[in-house]
Structure formats: C-alpha cells, structure tokens
Length: 221
Ligand SMILES: C[S@@+](CC[C@H](N)C(=O)[O-])C[C@H]1O[C@@H](n2cnc3c(N)ncnc32)[C@H](O)[C@@H]1O
Image (cartoon, helix red, strand yellow):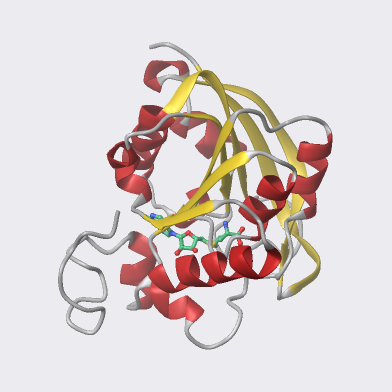
C-alpha cells in the first residue's frame, strides 16, 4: 500500500496529512520506532488479547489496525488465524515482518493508513484496534470509524482496547465510555455490545494502565 514516491527524509508523512498525534509531537509515527522500543511496544501480546482469543473471540479473516511491531497479530496468526496487520509506520511494519520471518509465522504486514482502509480491497470478520483509536482526536474519529466500517463484514466484530479515563495513573489519551459510544453507534453502522474495564500493558505502567475493552458489532445502516 505504500505507493508514494520519495524518501522518508523528503517527506516523513509520505504525502498524507499528519495525524493529530503527529502534529502534537511534531514527529511522524515512524520516529517512535527508531530508537528502541516505544512506550507501548512491550515485546509480547497484550494479555487481554490472549484471553479474548482463548475464549474464541477471533474468527475468520482478522485485521490488526495500527499493529505496531506486530505482537498481537503474530500471536493471533500463531493460533492459525489469517491475519493482516497494517500500520502507517514503515519501520514498525519492517520489524513486524522480521519477527514473522524469525518465528516462522505466516502473517501479512503492510504499510497502510487506517483512515483509508478501503484501499486494501479486502473485508475482515474480526478487527482489532489495540491502542490506535485513543490516538485520534474528535475530528479524526468519524473518518477512522467509517474507514473501519468499509472493511468489516456485516456482523463482524471490532475490539477496541484503549486507555480509559477512570482510575489512577491513566494513560496519555484517556477515553470515556461516552466517547466510545458516540464514535460507534447505529447511525454509522456499529452496535456497542460491551465496554469492560481492563488493563493495557505499557513500558511505563508496572501493572498496566487503566483501559477499556470495547466489543463492537458491525451492523447494516
Ligand atoms: C500506541 S501504538 C499501538 C501499537 C500496537 N497496536 C500495540 O498494541 O503495540 C499506535 C500505532 O498506530 C499506528 N498508527 C497511528 N496512526 C495511524 C494511521 N493513521 N494508520 C495506521 N496506523 C497508524 C502507529 O504507528 C502505532 O504503531
């Protein structure tokens, strides 16, 4: 999917509009992967994702949106699922591919923009968002949610694991339950089935940071 010409040095955003997070930090997401593990890059799958998988939560073709260096996607693929991980950071995609090769796991990783998933030309039965939704501001969310809808099969399942706004030591982009319900609703093709308090592991939270795990079904509009 990375068809833009030029080098990262010419245009680190490769012609796309920087996301709100990139505008805030002044750096492309790719830079997060240049000097050792990023704060969220814990080197193993999120325990919540492993628990979900053990309960049969993932089925059919799986998309991991904003897959980073791929630990969640690699874990799901190691269970025999067909998994595509996409990320806008090409360095993260390269690291994920190298891990797949080292571990002998069959999985796909491509550089792609989560705002334009339709370009993938594929549909998925289960979609995972581990730590991506919470990086988007209020203007970006409708674009991302529509993009997710364009690649999720009717009755497919989306899991959003994001920082929550409840509890001590919240993560950097805390999200309320109301924000999740406002972003995903029947008017734009989604039904929020459950939002459960959870934890997300980071390199800065010894016991994980407070999180929501939202289970959201794709419905016909
Ligand atoms: C907080 S990290 C989470 C990474 C991974 N899912 C995990 O659990 O370790 C967010 C990821 O989303 C990616 N990302 C941010 N904006 C994106 C976009 N518009 N399209 C695709 N990926 C994006 C970043 O490059 C980064 O790898």
